[in-house]
Length: 318
Image (cartoon, rainbow, N blue to C red; front, side, top):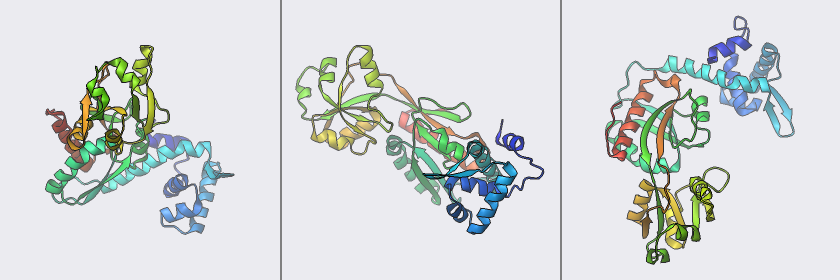
């Protein structure tokens, strides 16, 4: 059921004031009458009146007071996504341009990505925009790989890219490239003067990069299948500090090969092949189907695909 059918199903659309949808969206986003009023440039009394009308129209409190503050009701929460999508579809229809010329367009795009993908893609993207689309601006937000659909469904980002173990079928996707894993140690690490094997690998203290709760990953799952485990001495949520920690300690890290190559070029580090078979993993571009008719976002997607084709070292037709 699409957003419009959902709204028609739960509301008497013939008598419902569609102007209240924007107020509803702001109230659900802010969970505060005063902040919602400021968000849509209304006075607080006007927003209070809109909330009262919403409660009457929906026969639901919409927001209820709790010890933690105002929180949405179950029904309001269920309507939040469909209302947001409906508003975004209206906005897209009203603002869509029949043509998009990157040389003259003035627009800001929002991208969600992991810091690994920011590291690989953003320098190339910004260099290309500088030359081909000088008035295009980019805003990047951190990406929760376990729930990439959330900012896309909410319309807060135009595209997302990274490695996604699971992706809802409702989202459009495009394969960008495939990544492998490499081990890194400092360039005078004692292990470099010893036999490099699985036994040595599990003996060393490890650094692990994880944006999720927990301190295990695919390496640990594969080790567990063999009845082995490793000591993870440090868990960090991003890649920024990784090479500097590895360069100063006896820690070992297993990271994406492309970022490892850059680390080795810039710091006193050495790469080693993983002493156990690790899976390759696909890097994917995601976007919401509602943006299919937006020529600007289509251009952004093509640009990202071309950049990642260069990263992969091969060209793939669109």
